[in-house]
Image (cartoon, rainbow, N blue to C red):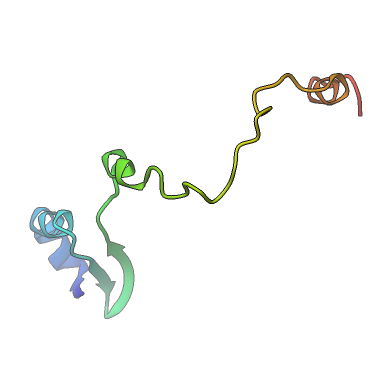
Length: 81
């Protein structure tokens, strides 16, 4: 992981972002002290690869979509405490 100072980051921002887009992480420092890290942003298109990861870890009950009992429904609607 490369470290660049603020001046280098401002001067070469588009080049640094191109590298980050390819997966590299870059630290920006101020007087040798790390203050920020440029990392790739995970877009929603990457979300597709994570769908289904929890398959088999839990079971949705058969009555999942059944109407709530009246006393619970009333509590949600503010009628009962």
